[in-house]
Length: 207
Image (cartoon, rainbow, N blue to C red):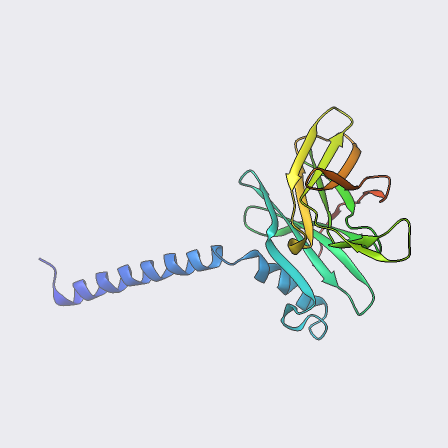
């Protein structure tokens, strides 16, 4: 039978172990938004205060297996300039790689890609307005899906929503993109002839 002092020590040890496990769980559950926001705040605490110039959405995060997460961020640099930032995170949610792409003025979408571990990662912006080829005015569009065709014959058709302001696709191929069409239901709204097929340089991330 345990003495009172021994019992107290065992209870204290048990409580400490439970606390450490809970604390470990809290650290692991730190979300990607907080992790990415910290990187921007470290660069410029005034400009990125409270993340007001950033759009970090769970809809623009994709996992490749259990080890890698891709996260697309809309970065409003100032009143005029904006860019897309794509981060690669490992299974511990450490940022390992990074690339950027410029916003396009006029088209309703953009096409950017890079190769990572035998996958082509495709991402871009989406807009509900675009330049009318026959006039100087903008026209409204309601994009519903994007179709990507690759030089090896692979075709991907994925639903999109302009409310997300972007898209992110992981393709099980390293082949080049040969066609990229965005649709409003069955109608092609824009094709690769209207936008650059931008191949990004993926860089090792240094905070």
